[in-house]
Structure formats: structure tokens, C-alpha cells
Length: 530
Ligand SMILES: NC(=O)c1ccc[n+]([C@@H]2O[C@H](COP(=O)([O-])OP(=O)(O)OC[C@H]3O[C@@H](n4cnc5c(N)ncnc54)[C@H](O)[C@@H]3O)[C@@H](O)[C@H]2O)c1
Ligand SMILES: O=C(O)[C@H](O)COP(=O)(O)O
Image 1 (cartoon, rainbow, N blue to C red):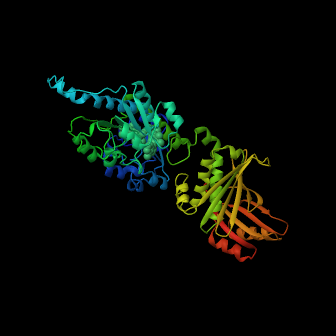
Image 2: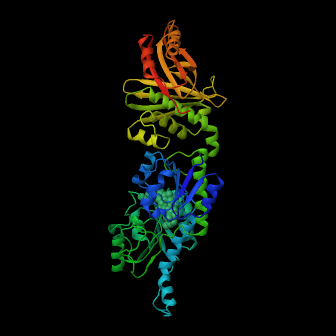
Image 3: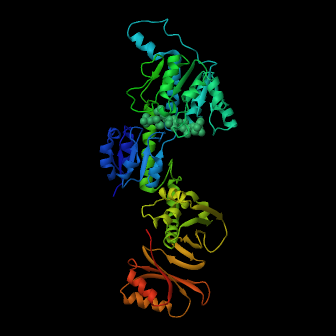
């Protein structure tokens, strides 16, 4: 069945065309983001949700999204998506981190010009036939100091354009190196210095718990008198009431805002104030940017839904289409190893140590790790997947350690998973044969060669005569068909194990019957998603 995507915000119709061309069913409802009740009613029918900033993806909405696998944000900011809740539900959240950067940077520069020369008010006045030539006295940008808060993709482009205007640029960004700042033509400073020295301040940080209210009443009071403030990032970055007061007092000479704490903004203490330029979140609204982000998000979502390739995800390691093709069997193997070890333990897990050897060590380890952890977690929660399981493992304080090595051996490569619980360690290793099929090759240090089936049985016994016969007779006598069987022993007369591949799940009466023979120390049913 073709995957189904809902577009709930006004994305360019290019996205719809791409979904269709790729064989993904799509429903285009560009106003649905504003109707959260209707969205909640139908979200359960979709594998993917493509959005801009109007749709709010809350925990409550996600509870209704039983089929959802991926949320694609055609744009940059994902503060309208509850990413921790999506991760817990195993839903990938991806964005398009570059598609609208130039457009948004240009909007910030446009706002800076607009507020420096009061262009919107002058335009309204002239339209009204007033010709108020003496009312609109502006300031030059040349030689002025621009303070850029957040020097990432958009901040970087703003800095480049501002340098072209011969402005001096101060940048505040804790993650910016001095070298990169120099390369950009900016001086890296602390926030206080930026606030004290800048003639214009422009914001280009994401909205997070750390940046919320970065221009608070206190910080606004630290700015230079006559400063002009531009915000084309997110509304919650500025205390709007405090900014309104600072404008009224004349401390701040002007402000240009594209974004508001509450959107759509139909009222604000800033509306109606002189020299406040406002636009309705138009930062990304150019034909070019909307084509870029629509095309990119539709391709990324289709790739994920159709091939498992992951690009620009905020809650999952990237996996290219080529990797997805080559790694498919290894991801399966990693999941089976995790599932085996998860089903073998009933105690709290302290740590999972994963060893990658040979060809496995050259692959995308983050993705393989996520698959192992998902396999382990499925024994606790069948809905766990590569997105949600690492989050849950972290919450439970499970330590994940990986080692890579390249020891030439019988296999081109293998993966070994060791689970550490309170009092013991259990390990299992597996590989992928040239037929693309994953196999278990070692359990508890005992070599085996076990194909993996949906229903399996693990038995542990002493290596003494008659065990295999007892197993066959007991299963046969109870009408259970064996599809495959493999065994191994640590030493002659020592510990031995067997993996039996059954045509149906191991019944409890059969398990009890095997234990009652006295030949087996352990009998466990195992299931795998093959
Ligand atoms: N108005 C619009 O339509 C529009 C369009 C696109 C993006 N945006 C907003 O712009 C934001 C920035 O986009 P980007 O592509 O440049 O993102 P980015 O990730 O490339 O850059 C953000 C920068 O902020 C820095 N940063 C993070 N926390 C900080 C802090 N506490 N103090 C100072 N700097 C901090 C980061 O180090 C990074 O360099 C987006 O998150 C989005 O909210 C708005
Ligand atoms: O973060 C973004 O990409 C911008 O805020 C654009 O938002 P929009 O897609 O709702 O215009």
C-alpha cells in the first residue's frame, strides 16, 4: 500500500506533484493547520505530515497519530513541533535547513532599511497625497554597528550583506569560533558588549528555553540609546511589552518585526506605535524559497517513507539512500541482535556495549546503534523504533558504548552486542551473509550458525547424549514442526545451546513439556520481525 501524506499548511504545490511522482498518496489541505480539531480527527490516516509554521504538532495531536512516521517541516524553525513527544512516539521530525536562509536574511536586511528610513510610514503618507518630505528624517547604515545575535546560516548571510553595506558587525553566538567570526568579517563579543555598542540589533537564533526572552526588559535597558531592533527569527525572543515601553520612552528608536510571540498576531502592544515596522511572518515568503523548501521536504519525506533514507532529521541519525540500500540487511541484523538480547533478559538493563568489526565498522554506526537499541526496547514496548528507543534508553539511564575494530576473521564483518544487567552480561554476535540474510553466529561465546525466523526457540542444556532426540520427540509428539535447527557447545560435555526455528510461536504447554524432560536448563520463546 502506498504511504499517505497530509499537507496541512500552505506549501507550494510543487510538494504535491513530487509526492505523486514518487508514488506517495497526498491530501493537500493548506488551511488545516489552523483547525486543530479537524486535524486531530484525520491525522490517524496518515504516514507523513508536511507542515510550515501554522500547524502545531502537540503531544495531544501525536496521541491521535497512530500511523504517523514522519513530520516534514518545509522551513527551518521547528518550535511548533513537540520534538521530544514525537521522538517518544517514534516519529521522525525533519526540516529543510537551508532552503529559505537567503530569503529570510534578505527580509531582515529589508526590515533594517525600512526602519532606518521609515519607509512604510512614508509610503502610506505619500499614498495619501500628503508629501511630508520633512517628517521622515532617516539614518544611514554606512559605518553603523550591527549586532547580530545568532550567527548561523541566516545570521551569516546577514553579516555578509551588512559588510557589503560597510557596517561594522558584532556577533554574539556561544557556538561561534573566533576564526569563523573573523572569516565572516564580524567581531565575536559577549551579549552585554553587543547590547551596549550596537546601533542596530538583529536576531537570528532559534526559539529555545535558553533564547526565549533574550531581549528581556533588563537586556533592552542595556542597549545603546537610539538602537533599532530587527526580529525575523521568532517572536518569543523579545519581551514585546517591554519593547513597546522602550519605544515609547524613546530609548529604542525603532523596531521591525516579522514574528510575534502569538501568531497569527491580531493585536500587540507594538501595533500602532510610530516607527514600528511589522510584517506577518513573511521572512520565508518568496517564490524561490517556497519552491526550495517544498521540493526538499517532499523529496526527503518520500525518501524516508519509500526507502528508509533519513536526511535533515532532528531526532535521528542521517542515513543516505545509498546507505539505506547497503545497510538494510545490517540494520535488520542489528535489530535482531537487540531483540534477541532484549527477550533474554527480565532485569533492568545497565549498559549495552556494541562491537562493530570489519565491514560493519565502516558503516553508519549511529544508525546501527539506533537499530540495536530499538530491538532491545521492543521487548518492553513493541512500538519502539529507531527514533524512540534511544530516547527511552537515555531516560532509563542505559549506557550505550560502541567499539570498532578490523580483525580479519572468517567473516567480512560482524556485530556483537553485550547487555549488562545487575549481575551478569549476555552477548550475541551476528553477521550478514553474501545472500543478504542476517545470521546469528555466536551466543554466550558459543559459535552457532542460525538463520533468523519469525518464531524461534532458545534452549540451553548440558552437552550429553539424548538431548536432541528428546527435543525432536517432544516437539513432534505435540505437533510442532521445526523449520530449522542449529546447535553449538562450549566444550565436549560442557554448556550447549540450540536455536530452533519453528513454524509457529512456541506454545507454553510445549515449553513446559520440554522443561519437564529434565534435559533443558532453559527454554525461551523468541520472536523476530523478519
Ligand atoms: N521569519 C522567518 O520566516 C524565518 C525563516 C527562517 C528561519 N527563521 C528563524 O531563524 C532561526 C535561525 O535560522 P538559521 O537557519 O540561521 O539557524 P542556524 O541553526 O543556522 O543558526 C542559529 C544560530 O543560533 C546560535 N545560537 C543558539 N543558541 C544561542 C544563544 N543562546 N545565543 C546566541 N546564539 C545562539 C547557534 O549557535 C547558531 O549559530 C530559525 O531557528 C528560525 O526560528 C525565521
Ligand atoms: O522557520 C522558518 O522556516 C520560517 O519561520 C518560515 O515559516 P513559514 O514556513 O511559516 O513561513
